[in-house]
Amino acid sequence: QKEVEQNSGPLSVPEGAIASLNCTYSDRGSQSFFWYRQYSGKSPELIMSIYSNGDKEDGRFTAQLNKASQYVSLLIRDSQPSDSATYLCAVMFAGGTSYGKLTFGQGTILTVHP
Amino acid sequence: EAQVTQNPRYLITVTGKKLTVTCSQNMNHEYMSWYRQDPGLGLRQIYYSMNVEVTDKGDVPEGYKVSRKEKRNFPLILESPSPNQTSLYFCASSFVFKRRGYGEQFFGPGTRLTVL
Image 1 (cartoon, rainbow over the protein chains, first blue to last red):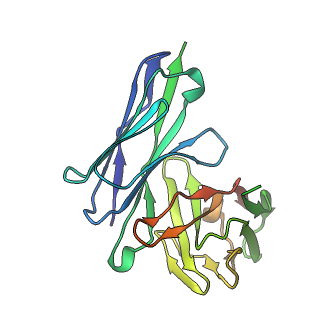
Image 2: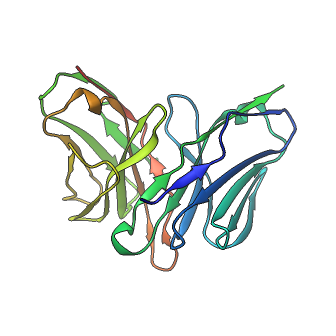
């Protein structure tokens, strides 16, 4: 069973702080990594995708991938109340019978308080 | 507008009455997938399709069927719905890149299904 684990929440940070969200995965053959944001009752929306080791920055968001440690993270700088949502880590496994299967972590609820 | 559409958005039905939830995308994506989302269990993949006439099981395929006869459509069929299939369902699609693999998935608005 391929697994994706996210740091347990909920996570609460003050406005303007850095929010750090973490995710580990079990399959070393994983190929693609995604962070989605989901507001209550809405569909997930993509924030970041990362495919190779290192950092990828997009505005206030930075995704970090370390394949050796099987670890992917998302940093949100200058957190805003509008960032309050559930953040989902998703991992696309590659190879064998799992090729094309996307597995989500259980999600981390983030609250940014003014 | 590039989008994934699902119909119906809300459905209340009874045990055993066959139903189909439609999913359509206008982005020419090769990959399409169905998920269900339940409190405490997160998003779980039901079935996925890497291209026309190619489908495969996700993590929770029992009780569901799919077909991919056209690139843009990927309907989800519940032949005999049961109460444990009450859930929020999402359809999603993405490109497939030869070197990088699968691209970002775009999600439909969701279908809230209640089986009595």
